[in-house]
Image (cartoon, rainbow, N blue to C red; front, top):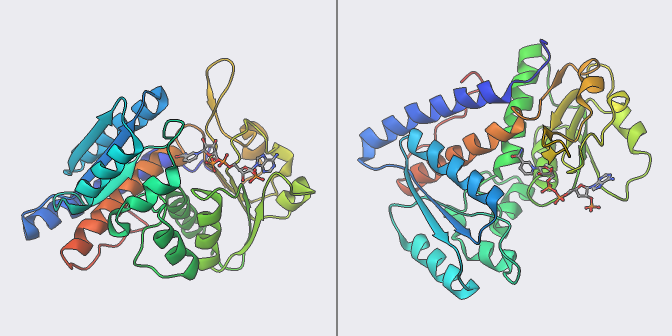
Length: 297
Ligand code: NDP
């Protein structure tokens, strides 16, 4: 179907662009961008995500350091972060969430030096995004969604500016930063959440829909207006073990001008943007001009 937004292949293009930019960075500086990932506990899904991040970072020519702690205290984790903050080989630090019970995720995130916070979760970075200051880091999933939306609109000769955009979900890692990004594109933004009334009607009137709810097939196909663009962030596992999004795909795909599948839509873009943020951080640490995230890469 021609209206599928193929996140997997678009992410592969972005990663290729990152590999080229990394080579040029290394030639100029003799350094490699360095990404450190801390993982605490034994969450199997987190272990899979961390392995994928490590693999992609190495493929892109980065230094990758994974700090696995089966069991540690919050104080030990904070000490580890302090050491990474001081480590000149490391440009990006990420702590895989969720942390085990008893940890304060906020305290841990706030300990990461904002200029190495490539997940963009530190309040200094979220504050910069809200204020439209562009020298911080934008959270990877919404940044990936924005890239997909920009590309899709460009391919149609259309603009995001002025469009009615609906974001379903108001989390700090997806919904709120996505709203800031779309405001920055001059869209007219509505944020919906669990207390929103008449969601189906709001959705039908929206030209861009970003679904980040975490409920399989929650957004019904007939909620999607003719020609709308749908970005499905949700990752949900059905009882049969299949991965599905938040949007009822079969009904939405016949109405949308573009729609991301699950899997193969937003997911691959998230890791690509993590590498991108780390590459930006490496450039900033050397006071080099930042590369551009080209739409046609
Ligand atoms: P959260 O659980 O933090 O947020 C979910 C949001 O959905 C909340 O704001 C909640 O509202 C809202 N919501 C819940 N029920 C309803 C409802 N019935 N109607 C309208 N809104 C509702 O989730 P995340 O933002 O972290 O993640 C959302 C989804 O995206 C998950 O499936 C997650 O796995 C996936 N994800 C995918 C990523 C990727 O790389 N593809 C990365 C990150 C997340 P309220 O605030 O009122 O509770």
